Length: 169
Image: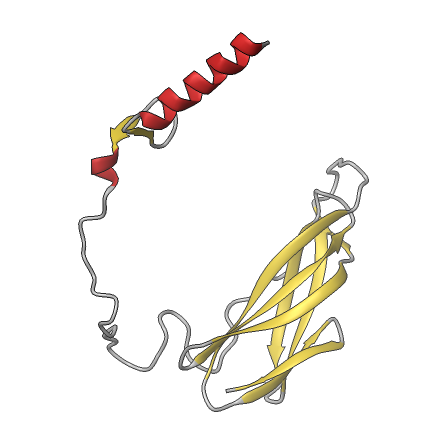
């Protein structure tokens, strides 16, 4: 037993001393010098932006939802927690972090979002493909729902009819 522990300690020490790292699996290796970044950025330098608009999504609009698929069987989601995450940027970016349960591991979570001008109303459901067989066990999910970028506006946020928070930009 003592020889086995000594052998394991020796193998661990030799493995830790190597200067090669596995990259991408399948036995592909490269030296650690090749993994070093070649671009140097000064940490105190400001980032230059061409405008006030965030990349990809206009300010004051909700990104594309993940709507339900036609022809699938709808199911429920049981929300255990929902929390707004407001990122410190200008304009602010808002996410809704949702934790809950879905009926089976095969169910996928979908949502739609509507901005009424005073509130963002999110409906969240789960769906499974017709005829799909799956283990009948409740599975937990964690999803971050993007609610977009907002400048000088405020909204209450509702998830499945219940208010989960609000934000002011």
